[in-house]
Amino acid sequence: MAEHPGDVAVTLLDQRLAEEAKPLVAGLVTDQVASKLTAQDPTLWGQEAESEAAIRLSWTTLHDSSRPLLAEIDALRAELRAEGVDRVVLAGMGGSSLAPEVITGTAGVPLVVLDTTDPGQVADALAGELSRTVIVVSSKSGSTVETDSHRRIFEKAFTDEGIDAASRIVVVTDPGSPLEESSVAAGYRRVFQADPHVGGRYSALTAFGLVPAGLAGADVAGLLDEAAAAAQKLSVDSPDNPGLVLGAALAAAHARGAEKVVLADTGSAVKGFGDWAEQLVAESTGKNGTGLLPVVVDGPDAAGFHDAGSDATAVAIGPAAGAARIATEGSLGGLVLLWEYATAVAGRLLGINPFDQPDVEAAKKAARALLDSTGDEQADEPALVDGPIEVHASEGLLPEGTTTVAAAVHALLSAAPEHGYVSVQAYLDRLDDASAVLLRTEVARKSGLQTTFGWGPRFLHSTGQYHKGGHQNGVFLQVTGAVEQDLEVPDRPYTLGVLQQAQALGDGQVLVEHGRPVLRLHFTDRAAGLAHLVAALAEVHG
Image (cartoon, rainbow, N blue to C red):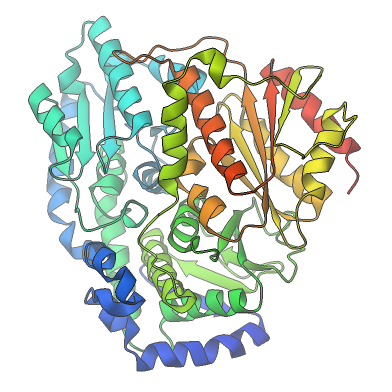
């Protein structure tokens, strides 16, 4: 067990798994993997991965190298507060939003996170007190379409309110990115350069995690202290190194067919850690037809955790509980570094490069192509309409004569192979349509399959890589909804609603090209559609 705030611990509760992991850990110790990883040795993942690894390993020492940021963040926060600006909105996707959300959630300080293209959710953020608002625009590449849209919308809103927009925009990006250049030219309040030698999903302790969280009031200095304490264990070549033990256990489980990792918080006091770990593990390992699929559930009694089968490993974030086979404990800073080390180690044992994401761009390209088309060309005729739901299905999925949503969902679940998985993808408002998360539990119960849930397009920057590059045994349930009030994107030829639809259709198109079954349910009325779908799921035969 973790003994002090900076400590981390991994407990293997499954004796068979512990025995299978032991020789893997011994090999890692012999090969000095922990110390080489800390020293940023890019050769650990083979020759093909070396060039990418060489520019992606600075995360191992961020607990030291990020410290100069602390005074800058504190000074900017004090400036803003003195001006009456104390509401922080974050526009970011993937690693740029997930880590700050966990940090502020755990600290109990407010942060408005925009990692969506849903017009309603963005409108709600705009409806806050703009006179008290600063927006942090975070993008590693500097060209993220969602984040660029948010920046344009907020810049216009500030201006329309008679507020100097440049004074309310803070930017976090890689040095030399298009966003850095345009932000400096526009005179934005502050442009923070993030460490370019850290990938997005490993960036929790860079400016991407620290700036928005620190401006919101989280103790980011304490976070670095926690990571520094954990690093003392994680950098040592020892069979007791928790990073080696966790990485080896996940790889050993995968070798016996448990390619899914079910994550449940069991009293860790860390809020939303599973969502952050989901991106780290899925995007790092899901490629070349292999990988670990994280399944985030709401507790140890949830479907998929308490009844995890031979294809899944139940992992507790916090003390051992329920059917957990592995328990990981520690402070937030310690857990972040633990899972980063373990994921890099698992990548080595799985024979993949944990620092690239070769399949992410495909969905982005498909969405861009649809944005360039007309709205009529984007839309396709539904296969059937059942009340407030239009049903769209990949070719050959629905049996002839299918007339109901229940029958369509049954056809999708029946298309999943043994030990496959179901991915529920909701392109809706994460706040107003929050009850959609209940779909994961219901689908898991009905199907008996491991079931993930993701808000679109947020998951495209997370599990989206695994869906195309990992084990090809998933079936996909997309949920989209009518837009009541759309939002224009200034100086762009599309609205947020059009962008949201293009992202859903584009990703579905790529999944179909990979031979995966896709069922899209479009709610012509969101509240009525969700109620109708829940009722339909009750009729689905397991």
